[in-house]
Image (tube, rainbow, N blue to C red):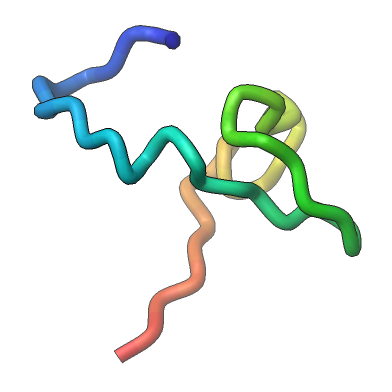
Length: 49
């Protein structure tokens, strides 16, 4: 697992998390973000609430 900017407690429920990308589900460890993604480059995000 990659390093993080903050401390977090391990939670076994997170081991089965799946990521949905372009119509397919992937295991958590296969999730990738392009360095050219606008969310990565300029902090774009989607907020609900």
